[in-house]
Image: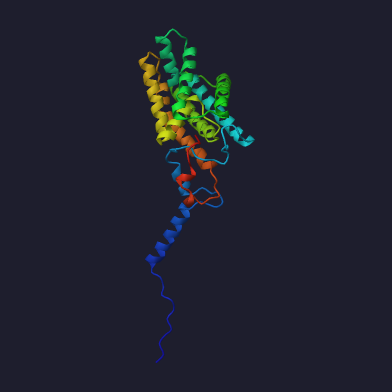
Length: 276
């Protein structure tokens, strides 16, 4: 009697279900060759960047750039200055560094303008032990931010309702964070105070948001002890600017990185810190 010819064994339902789930998971968490956002991209948005990512527009040195990189630098600094203007227009308090300058002016025979200048010089001197170097971005930082601040104050609203004032402060902090993310990733050099942040980050490996938060809180505390005026906006800025810069760097890094590489092949080594 001939034996029946048996076909290939039918896979069990559990096996099929497991295979489908594995393929679906692989699809979700794999990077798209076409630049389509997937779950892996969305999940990365839930936490701020710990360092300064390498972007497509990153300059090869602090003094050599191309038009696209310079455009990103100016846009970032202008957004930064506009955020500063929103803090001023809201009227809920000045930045921690201004509080420090106010405190110095109350204890020493100098104006707040001179105190601000001396603080900036001191911060630049602190770059030396951190081995931080200036660049084209350092010069543009002073010029573009000051210009953006002056222009924005002409057009920004000055609300009298507390809720609107608070909203303007929070939007301003977010604008400064995103602007910082843009201009810092050009690798053209940080501003005086941001140079302190990037220098400490590079030498210690501490996350950028934590470094910025620590600096602002310490500066605020010293300024307050010296007699500077502290407002709600000042406290919010000190507490939120670190995370804001971290999320700004994360957003810029997400959109600015080379998306032709599969996400699973991207390691932390491809997001090094700024060159010293």
